[in-house]
Image (cartoon, rainbow, N blue to C red):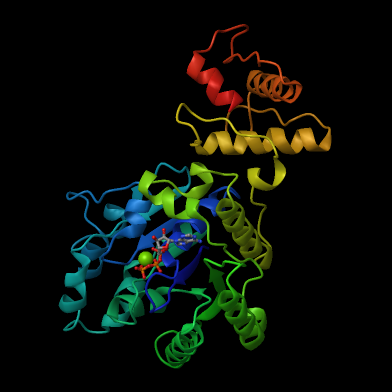
Length: 351
Ligand SMILES: Nc1ncnc2c1ncn2[C@@H]1O[C@H](COP(=O)(O)OP(=O)(O)OP(=O)(O)O)[C@@H](O)[C@H]1O
Ligand SMILES: [Mg+2]
């Protein structure tokens, strides 16, 4: 049965959406099927995953006002194993329309009945407030993940949020736990950042994730390409950080292992025609080769499903890897012996 995690902080711009998108994508690399629920009228999680609401299917707004079921509004994203319930500006209306509804804070929880069995994780991207929408997210959730920047008012904001959490535990959601506080956009050269993050760790101890998310420009760029960072630039510090966060989360839950190109491979990666962009299968393939090569063992060979490669694919990739290591031009096939590639394909692979 899936775990529902609300990603919330009433403070704006602290990295809630960035964390939702990138944690979700990293979880899929550990073969955890994940659903993102965009619960913010800004619709940033929807756009950041490269999706647009479909008027005919509806959004989380229609789910909340009861005109659609979850099965109507769920969309598949480009990332295999990652689905989305989208949002757009219409969601503003739900705050008003729900006012007269009985048990209006538990609407989302009721609407999600039956969906939890379909996913390993459901991540809810909450809006920057503690209004009715965020309360619906927190009431539907099993746990609360709190991204925070290490800035001057951070402590006050965290204490405020934790008192709301305690109130929720006493009233609407007695089983709600804290998944963790996540330090985001950390800049180790910034003295205030360092002081505040130390203060947060000293005060909240083990509640704070060991993993920290550094300030990394690639994390800010990726949404405009509609891609989670691990598929936009898997070797970036941001990708490494969110992969580590997923691993920490799964480790606590005794879960699987997140495939990590960033950690396992010092080699540059293969694009799919656009420099710097990989498809999910390529990330998984690379990891298989990188870890096998690092171990001095043979890469795993399979049938083209997630994490496994055909024999020819393995041979091709190893050919690229060794040619690159020798500084020579790679000979690359595409499943048939001695097939010629376009110049761009070769450049992509060598890059
Ligand atoms: N680690 C990071 N390094 C650099 N930029 C980041 C990082 N995390 C987030 N950003 C950028 O900071 C801005 C705010 O991040 P994000 O949208 O994730 O915050 P949010 O808490 O969801 O905001 P809101 O409260 O408006 O929903 C975005 O432009 C995002 O791309
Ligand atoms: Mg957001």
